[in-house]
Amino acid sequence: MSEHVTTSEASAEPTRRDFLYLTTGMAGAVGAVSLAWPFIDQMRPDASTLALASIEVDVASLTPGMSLTVKWRGKPIFIRNRTPEEVKAAADVALSDLKDPIARNANLPPDAPATGTDRSGGKDKENWIVMVGTCTHLGCVPLGQAGEYNGWFCPCHGSVYDTAGRIRKGPAPQNLAIPTFSFVSDTKIKIG
Picture (cartoon, rainbow, N blue to C red):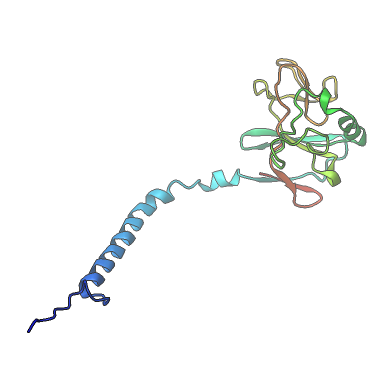
């Protein structure tokens, strides 16, 4: 008579050895994660860095024609409440007349045209413009309400920007950049 032997390999039942392998593997994984966590956690930005990620600016006191410069991420940010004449002057410029016809607006697709509306706070806030205040030529800070187009003028090398921050003359290759911004209320702008 032949003897029939059942082994754990032939049966679908887990054995004590399978259980020990599983629990040992799980304990090792938990140990590896708990050992690695302090190293991963120290790579997160600290509170001061997170505080610079975005700012809120109260613009209630800016009447049409007034500007404000704030600092965000170590850069000057120009905020201007444009007059109706400045909005119209920017809207009347044909895209073919622009040195850089791209909007450079972080809120829009990368190939959006540099119309006055696409560079402003939108259709209902066309009078508001928020821009990174560094010349795109060599990073100088342009002067506001200056130059041939009454926008911004960089005295270092002669770059001239219009009232929508678009480069019109001079060596600067691009329009002033528009950071990510939104209106959190009628009088507060969140940048970043």
